[in-house]
Length: 111
Image 1 (cartoon, rainbow, N blue to C red):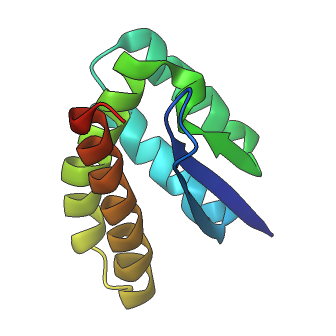
Image 2 (image 1 turned 180 degrees about the horizontal axis):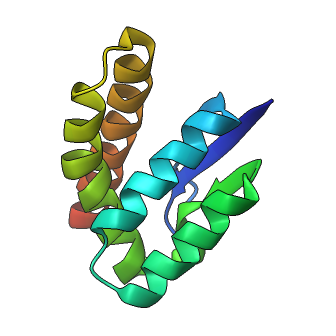
């Protein structure tokens, strides 16, 4: 089974689609939850990961929480993935980190 993580911003047509196995998205959400700053967001992500969603939309978390999720994707998630031996996982997380970087660049440009 596969899942989609849409890296988007509210009110913007720009969006990236991270299409991965459901288990990979679940793992990523669990790792992200460990590193976000807001306890409420952490609880929401843990609950979402347990549900094994087929789709997650970044903009649904609000701009501030989305920025924190992007921070974690680009930092702790990428670092955690680098510790795993799976080259396939490295490639998938690298792809997601690239999408997160584009999201941050668009945010800084105000688009």
